[in-house]
Length: 221
Image (tube, rainbow, N blue to C red; front, side, top):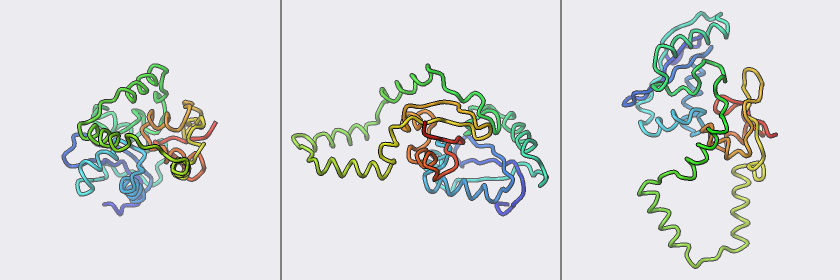
């Protein structure tokens, strides 16, 4: 089935999880490869599916066609068929980010939502393991001063990894279907926390090295 190259509505799930993902594609084989490559490489657009992939493992990953579509079906008809499947289930049981197939409607964050995200990040509860690691790190750093050379090396590492000063530029979140700006974030870090995509992946799209991240186009302001 994974070699099927036609249009289809498909479902992804992980053995052991109660949630699943519903998607559509004009080339099921290509989309199957896209999902697996993204999950294996830790750059999948859907952060919840990425977490599930690590939790349950690739051996429990399944992607299966639930409805075969006419190869000449228009994009609108394919999305309509996908919507029918999404509407069959409670949205909380899906890994899908958007309630409307292929649409960015309802995805704009309010100021209140942004504040909740920021507060959650500042006040997040760490596990005992993380607390232990942080405590050990602090103990090891007590009384130690960091040389300018070391600071310079760290800065170069951050610049090469995240694009240097680009990490702190304002970025626009753009709907890939309409080309309209949905939201503007003060930095890639803020955008990453809001949408759930990796900072490096958003940075790549901003620099023209990728098409989308999280289902959106990203551009520096």
